[in-house]
Length: 260
Image (cartoon, rainbow, N blue to C red; front, side, top):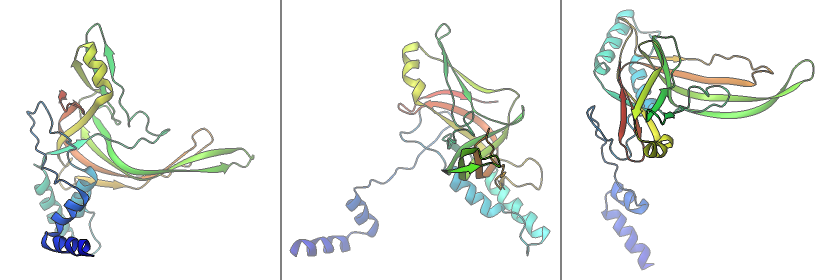
């Protein structure tokens, strides 16, 4: 009884946050600093959360409302664009892998040339030669069901549903590729520890447009040859990419910086 009384008194004296932190043994998370000149990233650096960033931007750049005049809409969008156009965003590439749908865009496959002692990393991006789209992250669930056609043949369909967060940007034609000079012994260590950052500023393609867009699922019907159903909703931030970094997520050393 006495122990319980003492514990209650201690928790009443401590501020709520402090009491909770002591009970859960949680240390406060230090503010993460970032510099474009950095050779190492802060330990545990994750950058900006694209889902949170998108929702904040969309709340200010939503499509024109039913009871909103055209002038009110233009003023609102212009104000939001002015707020975000000079903000440097840092997004870590950590997409959702949906096997069968995005195998070429959710993973990157390094290759090493021992003769040149050079590690090559192709950054997975889709789109036309001068425009790129990269899935940064998302929240997707997968489920399966059996479907039959009119001839009685059956197939197991994988259905993906959720939200994907992408960035779209202009880039010079060709693949986005990083080449890293590194000895074989070090290459063996870092190949499975690579991570990627996309660094840039939100932008509009032309006057009056928004920096963010949201797209409904395409709703393509699955087939026997393509037993996948994609019900994911896509959310995009248009950006002007400053640099793409490749780094070792164990040592946090920046191995390459790719720019236009």
